[in-house]
Image (cartoon, rainbow, N blue to C red; front, side, top):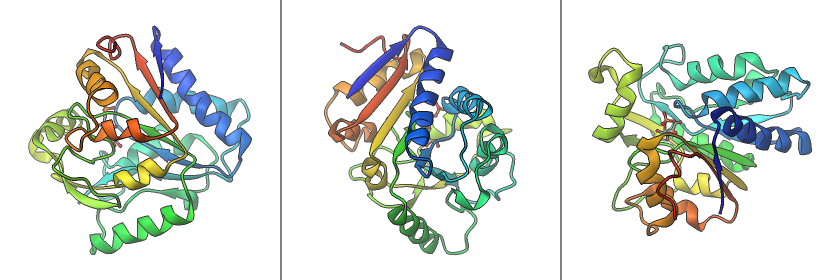
Length: 240
Ligand code: F6R
């Protein structure tokens, strides 16, 4: 596991973006695994800058980690809307190459199977991950056991609280999400985990240097051969 700590926020963003840009330069039809939340916003800005400097995403395919159950694509807090706003509307990616789980599908089990079938056809070259305060990756919440494939998950209270900042009140935060499982995440050839801020310091330490346990899903990343961890000083301050 490679751990890089940055003094400057925009340096972290630029470095993360360069890892994705390099992947696309090397392999124009690369498959990118993408995340939402506050951590990737600056990274997407830098990826858009790479595009403005000439990098094309015409042949790229993307998969997002997760989507809320019950929010239509055009809802302002759907992850589809987030991705349009922060990335897809600003690059030349083909709409048909963009994949997110459909959280409004009538048959969510069938939707999960559809997503897994697509993932099986398009192995992820590089996967971006943020880190939940409870150690979740995607919406794989801490539990006695974890699920490998795409599935519907009930969000933990702490996740609802963390995400309430984007909604009018915590009552408006969807209680369930569709998430890629840890199997698909760990099958990505390269994983880039980004975290920033003092509030992530404890879980960064637990995930990277604590025991490997389903009680901290991000700790499973310790078993992956090619993980690059990008932290600011605050998030990295408890590491030995
Ligand atoms: C988002 C996702 C989540 C977030 C995590 C951290 O697609 O899968 O695991 O990455 O909750 O969120 P932020 O970056 O807002 O702290």
